[in-house]
Image 1: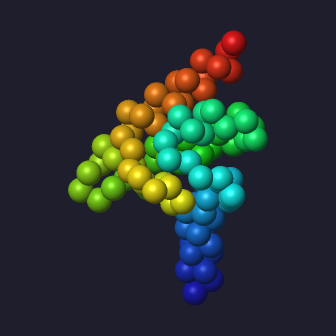
Image 2 (image 1 turned 60 degrees about the horizontal axis):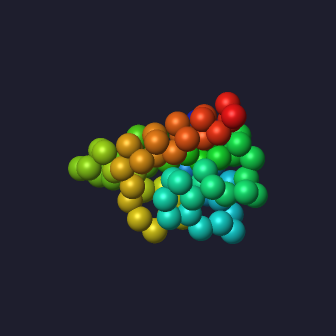
Length: 92
């Protein structure tokens, strides 16, 4: 019983994690996260890493991702390109 409660809490935290970081913001594409001025680099990375996670893969279409709070599916390639862009900007 206690393990079930703990597992449920962890599952909720993991699922809600990116949504908490995105509160009040509406991103359609991963590039919107990179361009956002009001988010720290670490939070941008956390959002994009979550978006890339298999947890948000679309059923029967593993190359697509759908992050809670977003309106469209995007390709994993687009998410990875946004992460690379974030890295590039961080090195500048």
